[in-house]
Image 1 (cartoon, one colour):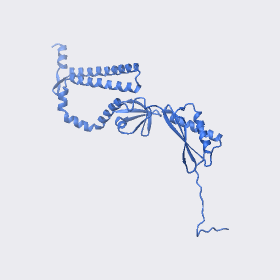
Image 2: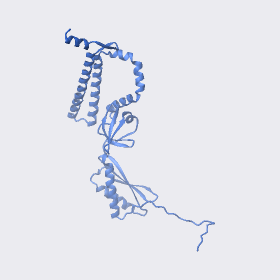
Image 3: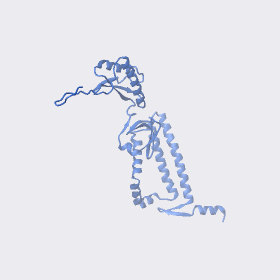
Image 4: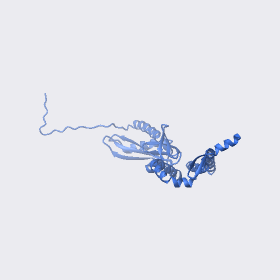
Length: 287
């Protein structure tokens, strides 16, 4: 028997019978090849969609979401064709494995929930790639929305892996929607007896001198409270880049401290006055 015929016999020899189909080495090779081609086509399709949306000047987050959805669809179709090429009948496989799929679904409920949440994030886009978000105590930029989890890069350049279900079920603050404008509050206390109108004007002058603050909405000074040791004020200003909130707030505090020193406005430290009152039966001995 010629070598080619032997190779053909080995390649087409039945290995297993699954879901009414015959699996051979040749069918496995064809299935792997189809999946590889589907992977390449998914990447090309995603890039093609991104390029087309760029030309239409579609927002970055929308381009990323649509590109991801197209890739998932192409890969899903490729997986179905690959299984069919291997020799597995999908209709028979699904009918025969219903109980098994239910068991797997219960065991992998968390993974399935995160996958569905990822699809919801890509379709509804409450959070998109590039958004500046606050999730619990974590603050950072969304770098990628995957099938199971979302990656957030913090200010410290640390990547946090957040399950997609948490972005759907938990409270998430998105500082990029509807605009990137953010109001920050810088709190300061002055000594009792200070001229409150002068304090207000000094705070407004400090805000007006900062070129990175937005002129609209206008800067605002609020008299917050009569504190235990100070009169408490809050300077409210707006910035266009929410990622700079801490840096801007720190710069304003430096400027406020210098302005108060120049205006002889005292920033008090916490203090307590203790009053001793005479009481019946209390005697003081003197030498």
